[in-house]
Amino acid sequence: MSELSKTYDDIRRELGWFIGQSREPEQWEPELVRNVQDVLITGLSNFYWYTPAQGAEAHSWSFLKPSATLGISANTSTYDLPTDFGGFYSDGFTFDTGTQAPIKLVTEEELRAVQGTLAQTATEPSYCAVRPKITNEGIEQIYEVLLYPSPTAAHTLRYRYSIIPGLIDDSNKYPYGSRLHSTTILESCLAVAQRKFLETEEEGGVNHQAEFERCLASSISRDQEFSDGAEGANIWPIEDPQDDLTLDRSDLRQRLGNQLFNKPNPGSWSHDETKEVERVLVAGLSSFYWYTPPEGGETHTWSFLRPSASLSLVANTSTYDLPVDFGGLRLGGFTFESGTQAPIKLVSEGELRTLRGTLAESATEPSYCSIRLKEQSEGFQQIYEASFYPSPTAAHTLKYEYDVIPGFIDEQDIYPRGSRVHSDTILESCLAAGERSGGEPGAHEAEFQKKLMA
Image 1 (cartoon, rainbow, N blue to C red):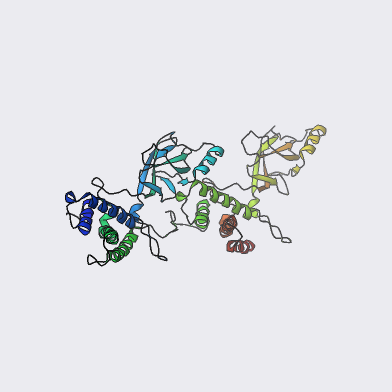
Image 2 (cartoon, helix red, strand yellow):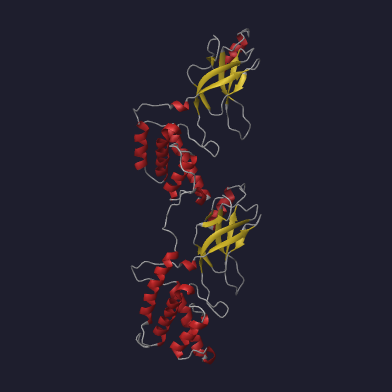
């Protein structure tokens, strides 16, 4: 023997000697052949799926949880899984390359519901379900996976799964785990043989059940060196060091991912987890921007939500778009940047129409203005426009202050409003929203209130 791993033939010979005093399979009677095979099946099963004593901790062998790949192609949604597939060990699939979100494992019923309600607009799958494949009589049943949306291009997916071990034979001669645990496997088989064919455990000179349990404890300890990291260990993304105290979109999303799922790295989030982080982020930012004080408390409008802006007027043009985040004109309205012209008075749209019908357009600069919602095309966000009367006869620059409607932070606009001064308060508002999403307000709500008052 050139190695220490015990093969199918090695174990059979040991069992043949133990049961029938013969190490030569070709000399065995049919009954001994059947007995050795029965013991081998039971012994391997006892090793693979060892049942610990009551109160003892169970162990799942690392060698029964391999990594695998699945090649997917465009416009194909269903794929066969390995014949020894016994269930996902991972939460689903991840893409071998790229920054796509992991594919979340759901039930077949949930996948059908998603197919009925979610239009296929994405180019990569977001959900998967596993189901037994329909088989012909006499053919062993295997599993298949359904993906949705269907991929629009070829990809390689990675996953881990739990193995259903097959029986070893002349072709598949090594038991799973035999390179490290051959002695334990053999003792498991000998313990079965001792129970079935010897009257007492002491016959044969060794208590093989006790020896199996001793070897098993050592094997489990050795196998734990190959096991995964601590359950729920949070792995943060590798990024450049922070160079200031301002928190941006990436910082807030990582903190929320860590709070909600113990997963601060967005690359490990499923489609659903990404949506949950975005939902909580919207709630947290909204709570900060438009804080509602308790009854009797004093309201406050953030100064950073009241910016100054300018509007350039050109001759003979009376209507102008206002900023996309415009939420209302502050007191004072529009004033001219230079000159001695009077401020432009804000009136309603109806009043402006009345003025146009009764007031001759003799002035060279506007005296009145109204704000109205701009007629929008379907699918576009509605914005405001300002209409002036009289129309200017020359170019002017107007100054004004307005209330901002904050937009959602994204990959281009990464900083929340007010983050340079209030990053800590914004963070606590978002973490408080995360607490509320899971139930009642907690410590972060109290911390948010405290920082808000500061």
